[in-house]
Length: 306
Image 1 (spheres, rainbow, N blue to C red):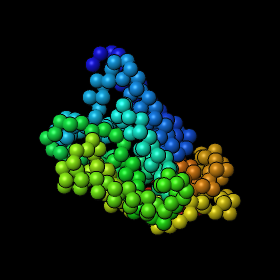
Image 2: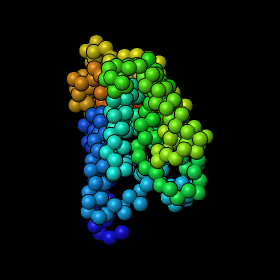
Image 3: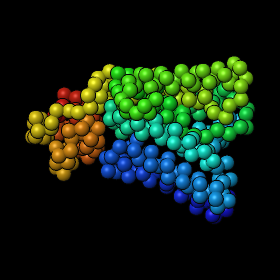
Image 4: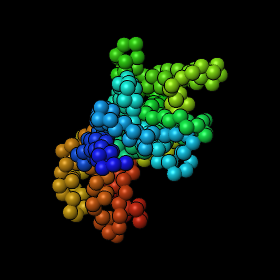
C-alpha cells in the first residue's frame, strides 16, 4: 500500500469513528453517530472508487478462508463497508439502524447499545464464515448488525412500537417488524441452500446477527436504564429527587444531571460520568451505577443515591 492508500484508509476510519466519538463526547445518541459514520464511510468508498483506489476494500472485507487466521479483524471491519456500486445496500441498513436502533438505544443506554451492535456484527460475520469455511468469496456490509438490532429489540421490548416503512410509514410493533424480516431471511436462506438458487446476499449473516443478539440481550441489558419487558423511557423529573448529595468535585456534572436528566438515556450518561469522577464518601472507593443508582463497589451499604 502506497502513501496515498494509507491516507485514504485513515480518512475512511476517521469518517466512521468521528461522528461516533462526537456522540460519545457530547452525550448524544451513539446510534445516530453511527448512522452518520456509515454514511460518511460510504462516501469515502466512493472517493476510493473514482480515484482509482478501490483496491483498499480488499484489506477490509471478510473472506471466510482467512477469518480464523491473521484476517480475523475483518469480522468487524467488513461491517463498516458497503457495496460502492449499490446505494440501496447502505440505505437499507441505515433505515433499520436509525428507525429501530435509536429507540433501542433509549432502552439500553449508549454503552450497552454499542455492545449489542458489535455482538450482532460479529455474530453475523462468524455465522457466514462458519457456513462457508474455505471460501475466498468476500462479504461486506452492516446487515448482520442491523438484524442484530432487530433481534435484541424483539428479545427485550417486543411490544414497543416504532415508526417504520412496512408497507406504509406508521408505528408498527417491534415484534411484527423483527419477525417479518427474520421470516424473509429464513425463506431466502432456504431458497439459496435448499433450492440451490444463486444469491449475492449473505442471508445466513443476517440470521446469525439476529440470533446472537436475541440470546444475549437479557445479559447485556441487566442493570440498564430500562429492564427488558418494562415500558416507558422517561423518569420522574429530577426535581422530585433529593438535591443533597455526598459527592465532592463533581458539582458541574450534578448541575447538568439536574438540568438534562429527565430522559433516561441522558440521565444514564451523566450518572456514568459522575461514577467515574467521584468517590464513595465513606471509604473513598470507586463507584458503580446500577439501575440508575450510584453505589460503592467496595461495600454496597456505604452508598445508594439517589
